Amino acid sequence: MLRSLAALPLLFALTAPSFAEEVLHRPSESEPQSLDPQKMTSANDQAIARDLFVGLIALDPHGVPVPGVAEKWEIAPDGKTWTFHLRHGLKWSNGDPLTSADFLYSFRRLVDPKTAADDPSDLKQVVGFDAINSGKEKDLTKLGVAAPDPYTLILTLAEPRLALKFLISDPQLFPLPKATIEKWGNSWTQPEHMVSNGPYVMKSWTPQSDIVLVKNPNFYDAGSVKIDEVHWLDVEDTDAAFRRYRAGELDWMFLSRNTIAFARKELADQLHAAPVNSLDFIFFNMAKGLLSQDIRIRQALSLATDREIIVTKVDPMGDVPAYSMTPPVITDYTAPKLPFADTPMPERIAQAQKLMQAAGYGPDKMLKLTMSYPTRESTRQILLSIRQMWQKIYVDLTLENSEWQAFESAVNLRNYQLGIMAALGPYNDYENGLDNYRTDAGNFNWCGYSNPKFDDLFRRGGTATDINVRRDLMQQAEQVVEADYAIIPIDYRTRNNVVSPKLEGFVDDQVYPQTRYLALKP
Image 1 (tube, helix red, strand yellow):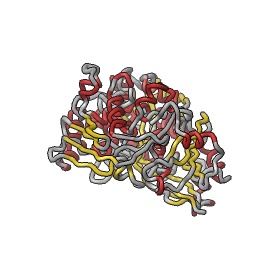
Image 2 (cartoon, helix red, strand yellow; image 1 turned 60 degrees about the vertical axis):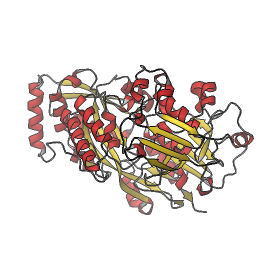
Image 3 (spheres, rainbow, N blue to C red; image 1 turned 90 degrees about the vertical axis):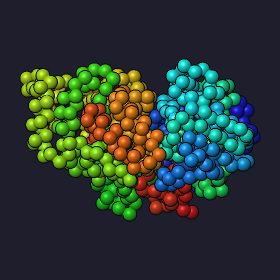
Image 4 (cartoon, helix red, strand yellow; image 1 turned 30 degrees about the vertical axis):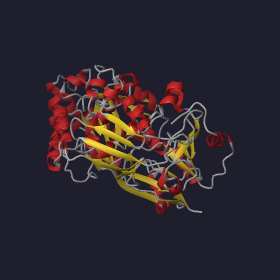
């Protein structure tokens, strides 16, 4: 991907004035912690990565797997051998040839403990993964990935994995350039170094402001890409960003509780709303501390959280109260609900009070807890309402906000008691929301949750070849996490956006529409 000396076309793109006919201005919810595809956990960062790179399998506008760098693939009858056939004539954005060797390097780098990838488990079923990722096996060539020629990549699995067609599209499995990474180290993702194989190449990155990408003429499907230049604009202040949208500085913007009423009244023709694959939830530190040790407290807090009030009064965005982990937009799956889903709130509060009293708390002895959250006014309003709800069950909650990077760092280091987050899924599959609770899910396991029963059910479900068996085992796995009260599901999100009438191809049910499928009217 990256080379120490870029070819002349890339140098021109980075230094010459832009004469782009179509420039898209889209919102970026947070400053990226990294644009190394194997070291990012934020869905926002991964969305930027999808503009810059593409893997063996890509996602269509609706998140359905389609051919990417691989024009076709075959799966052996036993499900253990996947053979990918790469397109011919592939190039990096600097003109260097892209071959199966770039994927071979990327996959080996992902599982190498020295990389410290956030979650290498997309390749968990590949032969040799456990031994290499644990550090027991030092020889990376023992990983079951082979590149017999420049146009063929073969994965050999120890167990079948139906979800692999989704996992292969993840940023962790994008191709990467060995020579450039080895030369530039952690700075290989800087604009002056980075080349990419996706629809766009990076032109500039101004921290806390914007990331500018320009069309990559060497992308294999460059002819279908309509947007010449895309600016990912920092919009952590969502209300200010809404004003920027109205001023024509953004081509779309997601709405907050402070802006949705105005948009519904004054911008109804520009309002786009749809349920998305997203769950807002509170999570407990399950690795250490009081909350990891006393399920009675975790259960009481979940019981006392009035989801209906949150979605109708506190944050009326059209969201749906959540009593399970898997959003209802996921097809071919019925998520198991928390046992109190249909219990009236007064009864739930009474149950929660009894649990708290059994744990040693009451009106004269309040439990002091701290909730960590990334700075955002809408999140603060939700947490203020939850603080009032929990006071009824003898909890004194302190709110502690920070910028996203600091919040993410604290979560990864387990330096928190409770946190709040939104889990966003890029594709329609129920494994996507459950795999974060595996013991070995790395930094994607925000809770630090670990239960051997869940791990076993998830593994057996993930490696099942019968879709009915797979679904049943995953439902059982979800019930285990719910019974442990590792999280408090709050709501299934409806994405509310205002979208410029000049923007074409916007897909309402995708949180992060891919730029390559968008266009601007003349």
